[in-house]
Structures are given as structure tokens and as C-alpha cells.
Length: 172
View: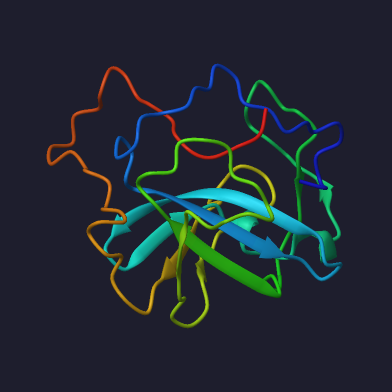
């Protein structure tokens, strides 16, 4: 994230998982206007829909940031562009797999299944470069095969869980 000064790519307390444990995790590789490859995790929410962060599909290096006015007590010099206009990244690839357990490498994606994207990603209309509304929905041309992945299981009632698990690919 170029708009955060001093940002470091890290995983805290991360561990590899057993095959087929988290079949809803997806990987997104994208390329910005300068040719830099970016990588994000995502979640399969239906057989044809992938949810990810908006900053994973927006070409953020072309934005001119200004200081974020945060109402949070941990205000950390995040950036936002008022009246945000943006362009999508040049290239966007979505990969799924339920058996990959190790680190993803930018060059070797042989154990991942590439899914074709239908149209353009839908970026939340309130997206800004602070923390709010950083959501994008990607529609796939076809359903993810059952042997490759499945949508995340969502709770039917609205009671919040006491314990949550965060999962995704990353670098340490």
C-alpha cells in the first residue's frame, strides 16, 4: 500500500493449514499501471462471487492522497481522497484452490485454478483510502468447481460469534 508510510508486509501468528480446511479462500493477482504485481486474499461467498478489498482492484498509485480525518482513537496517518475517482488495475486474475497449504509465489501458480472474471469488479460506492467501505465484489463467468473450492459458510442468525478466525494468503 503506497499510501501508508512505513507499511510492512507481515503475518502475525500465521500458520499453514491442512488441505481442504479453508476451501473458500481465493487469491487475487493484479498489475498496476507501472507494471508492479500486487497480491491479495479474497473469500468465495457464492459459487460465482468473490469478495475482496477494494484497494486490491483499484489502481491506488494514481490517487493523490490527503490526510484522513479519522474518528478513531488510533488515528495512524491513513490517507483518503475526498470525492474519490479511480481506475481499475490493468490486469486482474482470480485463483482458487482448496488444497494449497504453503506460500503463494508470484511466478508459480501451477496448483491454483484460474477463474475467468465476468465484466468489471464492483467497488463499494463509499470506498475511500481510509478504512471505510474497502470492499469489492468480483463476479466469475462460471461456477467454481466443487472439487476446487466452496463458498464460505455463513451464520444464519445475527448473533455475533465470540471467536473469529482470519484466513488468507500472505507473506511473513
